[in-house]
Amino acid sequence: MKTKKRTNVKATMPVDKVVERLRAELNRCRGSWLKLAGLADGAFHYKWLVGFASGRIKNPGFDKVVVLGKYLGIRLRVENGPHFLKYNPDQ
Image (cartoon, rainbow, N blue to C red; front, side, top):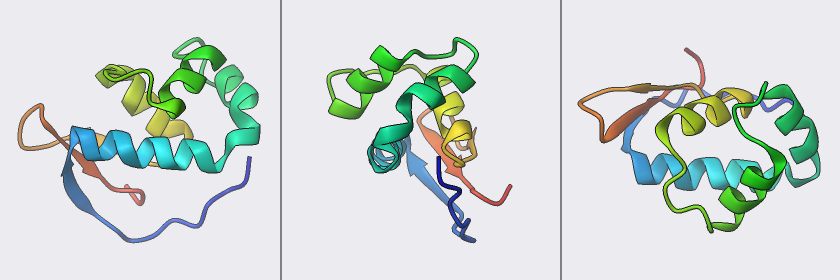
């Protein structure tokens, strides 16, 4: 898996936008999904990654979104209630 250069972008965005961003990042590292699933310690499996990336999983679950963000280098935290996540790759 390639290491991405982190930017200084900090933004609060709705969860659905975070999910779109994670889907895009996941599709960029398409050849590394088996490795990613192995690193996740059972938080998600390869089959889940395939379903999430393809858009078949409409509601991926908050915990899985946060864990996936962690492994993709995107740090997320709840801000302004449960419907928004703080996207801060430098935190």
